[in-house]
Length: 367
Image 1: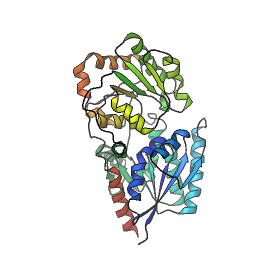
Image 2: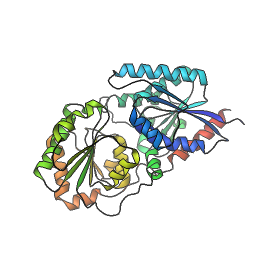
Image 3: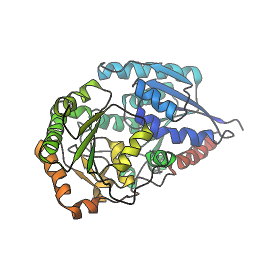
Image 4: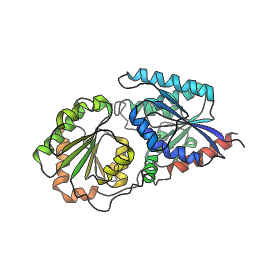
C-alpha cells in the first residue's frame, strides 16, 4: 500500500509549536504517511525562528506579507496560495490548526480543491463572535467545512456536537501544546518562585488600544506602588500590540520589556513566573499545565477548563480589575496557593499520536 499523502499547513508561530508534534508523529510512520509542510508566512522572523527551533523544513513556503494588511487581503493571499499548491500537489488529506487567517484560508482552499481536511484544536468557543476577533468566527467556519475534528477536550467536543457536527468526525485527543511542552522538557516546578514576577503577554486584536492600555496602566500602578512585585512583559511582533506597553512601562523600575523569543526560552520563563497575566489561549494552556496561576485579560475565554479547575480567573482589561486581582494574590498566600497547582485539563502529551492513529485509520478505510 502506498503511503497516504498528508499536507500540514501552518502560518504563525503558535501553529508551528502546536503542529510540530503532529508533523513528527506522522513522520515516524513513513510506511503510512508521506508529509508535506506548507508554510504560509503570515508572520515573519518569529515564524522562521519557530520552524528552526523545531527543526522543521517547509516543503513549500509562501510569503504573504501580512503585517499591516487588512484581514481580507491576508485571507485572499492565503486562499490563493494554498489553493494553487493543492491543485498542483493533490494531497489525500490536509491538516490545519486553530483559528488564524492561515487556518481559514487553507480550509477554504481545501474545500474549493475538494481535498478533505482535519481541524486540530476544533470546537473552541466563547459564544461571542467579537471575542476573540476574528478568531471566533474563523473557528466556526473551519469546523463547518472540516472532515475530521480533533477536539482538545470534552467541552470542545460538546460544542461541536451542539452545532450539528457529525459525532463520527469528532475525536477528543487532548491539546498538542502539552505534547510540545513535554518535548521541550518542561515540567511544573515543585516550589513557589522566589521572586514575585508577573509575566505578561497581551496581543489579541480586540485588545489593541483601550484594552491593552487598561492592562498596562494596572501594571504601571503595581510597580509604582508595590516594591514586592516585578513585571516582565513579552512583546508581540505586531506593532499595534507594542504601543501600550512601551508607553506605560518603558523605563520603569522593576518593569522589563522583552522582544519576542523562542518557545524554549519562553516556556522556561513561564515555568519560573510567580503569576501570568495574558490574553493568549496557548499561554493559558501552558501555564495551567505548569502550575502557574493565570489572570485572563479578556472578557471571555474558550479555555474554560482552567477556570473550572480554579487555576485561572477571567478579569478583563479594566485597570482596577486587573490591579485588584493581582493585589489579592500578592496579599493572600492562601488564595495564591490555591491557584498554584498544575492541572492536566488540556491533555497528557499524547495528542499527536492519537491524531496520527485516527488519520491512519481514516485514510486506510478510504482506500
